Length: 204
Length: 204
Length: 204
Image (cartoon, rainbow over all chains, first blue to last red; front, side):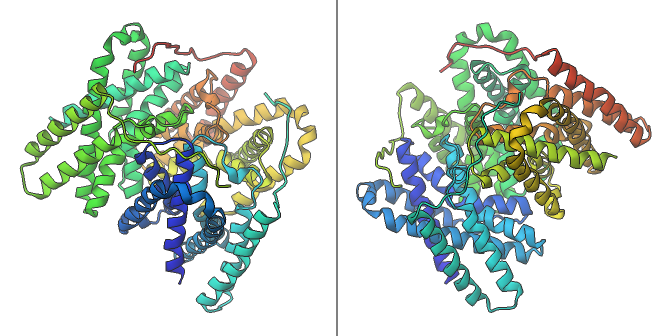
């Protein structure tokens, strides 16, 4: 089940990235590259930081074709995409939780410290979106109050403690989804925000 | 021959990066760093993604001196550079093809999947320019319709299939140059562009 | 002593990064992430480039708690921070020198070429600040004339030649500090600047 959700999430991330590319009027190649970076950049960053080779998509290159296919399909179907706002937000929320779980799994396989397991989950969940925003020259959304990283950290913590408590892994995946997914959806619905730090004096 | 062209290409990339730095009024150190990132960033990114250590310039640090030397020479000779528009564009095109071939070679040595060989070639060819644009805070040129990545992908595919077909490697290098180089030059001359994806509805 | 200074420097970098985050009105999570990237990004980049695993903070995850703690303390204490301009500038200068020395040490342990030892020191010293500026969408300060990289290079060279000359390492640390620290402070006091390269003709 996790694997199916993983591919669904990668496809959804690729499609939202393609729409972001379209808003910046990138060319078709730029659309595919931005989709790849967004969908695979979190896992790639995690693997680079942990020294976990080969990278996922280097070992399974067909995932690149999936991502580029999804991006090109988005170009063709773009006119009907604005009707799909909610499906996309829901898939994006599922993706955040699923990516986080996958990242925690890699961390635990490598036997790193619990703090790093949670960091590995969070990096997998959120770095793709940060790279997307930096590449199209925007201050990353995730820094502007969206409850995105927080959802990822909570999910990672739940998943890590569930697994170390010895619960069956399928059950822990379900629990993590059942906590992380509604948390993110409610944050969108009710506009929950992280407090901002506003500082207007110049130190230099 | 490939090695000579490789050093010529690195020098040319360093010089065009130095001019880009001058347009943003960077200081001399910034000029050298931007030149290094542009000239060596593609190969470095490829090596990080494939886990191919030591990085090229770590094993051959004199290439750093070459790059910084070329950058500083550009500062001194900047006044006559605008007469050299065409030589630079031609060298840049040679560089794109040569970097792509070098990247494919590394991929094939490591025995990765053909798709990844082509990605390795493309990353080597184009990522330096993307990093340069991100560092000086511009949306990367390569996403804005320039036929740059496409040239790299075509070159990589030609090179990969030539080598796997068992042709002598010098011949395949020549064929790849004979296809990739005029492709890029014609794209510049006739203003061939990738189609853009324009999407102006906001999903969020 | 080097270790104490190292933790002081990491804390100081985290706090200045938190203030930069506050000027861009990032949320609390963004403040912590920007602090982590700034304080640990230089060492992380060095380790990735040299293939030196595990990364420092992966092996010692408590340093992440230190960085985030310092960032959150900055949010709370921000109102009194503008009185601390000089202490911060001094700590930042110590940090630059200490990070450079630590980076040189890693390079020498790995037995790389002297040029790469100096590059490893410089990357450790300055890349955190570059990543901070790129993430908040500014052209990096270090490219705009500040004598920052130069101080790092001089410090690295002094340290490398001191160690290879066989002097006791504590003494070499003191010498490097005694040269690098006042160099940076005088550069700030007297407004010493690197010359800029200004080029206003468009090549393309």
